[in-house]
Image 1 (spheres, rainbow, N blue to C red):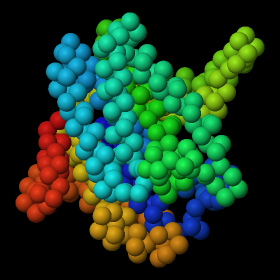
Image 2 (cartoon, rainbow, N blue to C red; image 1 turned 180 degrees about the vertical axis):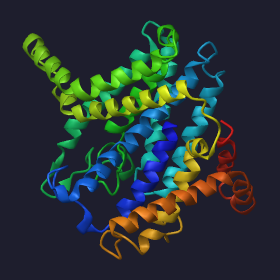
Image 3 (tube, rainbow, N blue to C red; image 1 turned 90 degrees about the vertical axis):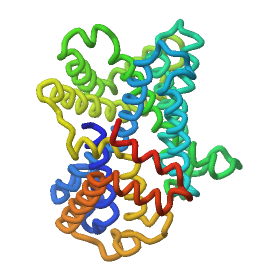
Image 4 (tube, rainbow, N blue to C red; image 1 turned 180 degrees about the horizontal axis):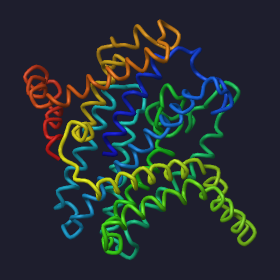
Length: 370
């Protein structure tokens, strides 16, 4: 359900952001100008889309990986599938955006990091796996503040200086080259992985209400109190040891995002406990996120074919008003709902036409079976 919500929010968010006219976008901070109230609501919700997707990636992947923890590392089917998934994500990421670093590459490197960390855990089992993942997440988040400061009046300065573009794009580069740099984004993936491990613990599975309560309460604490807690720890460490966690505390908004994501997951988990969720088109949308993402990049932005909606409509060229953008977004989502409904015959047709050029595409046919 969470993956389906995230992919639908991504589709409408990208469409509206691409087509909505500039004069309908608020130039002020959220809720300062009442004229842009609904735009501000939309903009806030849109900001949670990629964090939710990245967090869910780590949570789902490691939840399934850790379920087979008794198997040897390379004998674990999830490890094998994980490395194949990494290759697939990097392949499509660079095909869609050869000169940039997008969310597919970010997720690919994130899953690779999860696998390598799991391998380290298998060698050194002194520390619980969830501790590894949470510590790595905190370290990655702490890099956001110093990297964000590497800029001048003209904007972001690529770093590390003098490195090849494709490496700078992973770490710190202008937004047109690096939309999802590794820091802080894979921090969400590692945090989700830590949650995925904890969901296997006996005390969380003692009753059917424990997991919803754990997710919801943890989310509330992170959303409302993470900032106070981070700065309290920072000041305590500064006075006691002479150094603090200023960089981590400066990224307090990252933890607030995680809090909102956990609140949503807690609500969805409660729904799953109260109602029988049957296989339907909505659920299948969340099980076919990669083909949906790839095709939407082609249709909307003209990736690969250099011909898409963006060539004709943008915020400054033939822009849409809010009503037109909303209707367009609904039709855009409906298009992909139809695609997912017919994913098997469409996949078979694709394989006949382009399967030789992009054989890795056959992976899509298995998505709906998971």
